[in-house]
Image 1 (tube, rainbow, N blue to C red):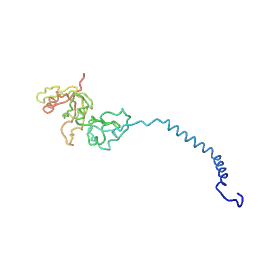
Image 2: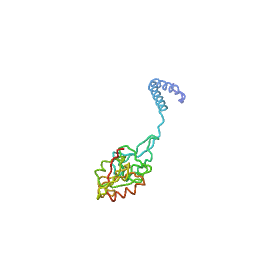
Image 3: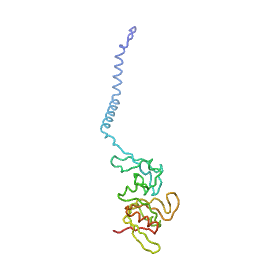
Length: 219
């Protein structure tokens, strides 16, 4: 600008444009790379499939034994794809404090049929869930949940034996040998079986009056 020429913003405009052109030319490769990167991100975002919905399911946080009373530390929440979650899944607040009817592996879902109680009967249509204390704890220790057994009663005085229930499923093995639900100790061991209602009275009477054991039927 010549001496004495009045300063105006328009007088500097050509210099600013020239500086901008030179700056763009020097940085053209960087700007082009940024543009390509943004375009790639936009393409990947457009091609990415939408996130699938999930269902929160309460599962065992670790391997758990039959008879375990659940605490919050025994549980975690897993995500299942809709339609793959089991029916009758319980929430953690329902599961805490309940006793397991059978062993549960880490990651297995907790359903209402997993617990000792009235819900066991819903696992076997037409059968009542009956808790029995069999005198031979060692024999009960050979059973697993899901076994089908015949229950046999023997009169200690005469040695006479009768089959009092046939093909009854084992629904739960809630405690160790001699342990009852209150932490005390009684002879034998508790087992919960599914029994047709017509056979319940005869079976419970036999348990009180006679020696009851079981067999695995060979049918």
